[in-house]
Length: 108
Length: 122
Image (cartoon, rainbow over all chains, first blue to last red; front, top):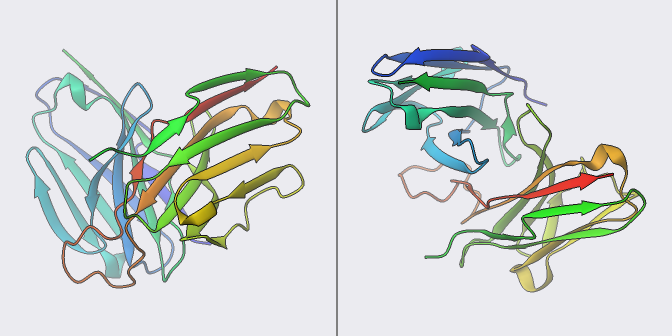
C-alpha cells in the first residue's frame, strides 16, 4: 500500500509564528486530505487537495502530485491551532491511508 | 445538519468481554468507515462500507471483530472477546460518495469523523 511520511513529527511555536508541515507519499494519488485533531480527539477536515493550492483563512495547502508531496502552511499561529495534523492519501478507489501526524504546540 | 454520531464515548471492560460500538453517519452519506487509532498514531482503517456492502475489510481482524451496516445507514462494530491490545479509540467517519476524479469542490470525497469511542480493556 501507499506509504505516507509526515514531517516534522513535533513542532513547538510561539503564538504569531508561521509554520510549514510536509507530507510525502510513495505513489500517485487522486485523493489527499489534511485533518486537524484537537486536544479532545476530534478530527476535522481542513482541505481536500489532491493537486494544486487552496487557502482557508490563515491556513493554506499545496500538493505537487508529480513530485508526491503536499505542504500545509499555518500563518500567524494561535494557541487554538495546537493539536495533531494528519495527512491522508489514497489512489484509485482505495481508502485513505493516514500518516503518523505532526504534533503542534503553540504557546502564548 | 447533525454530524457523525458515535456511542458510547467511553467504555471500560475486562478482557474476554464483548463490546459494541454504534455509528450514525451524516444523512445522505453512502460511504461509512471504521478506523482504529492507537495512542500517538494515525487512524488505521478497519472496514469501509459503500451503502450496505463492505468493500474494504482487509484489515479487520475477523477472528474477533465483526461489523454490519443494515439498510445502508447505521453501523455497529463488535469485538468478542476483547483483548488488552484492543484498547484504542474507535473512529467512525462518513463521506457522500467515493469519486475517482472529483473535478469540482463538491465535497463528495471529504471525510467527516465522529467524536470516537475510547475503549479500555483491563
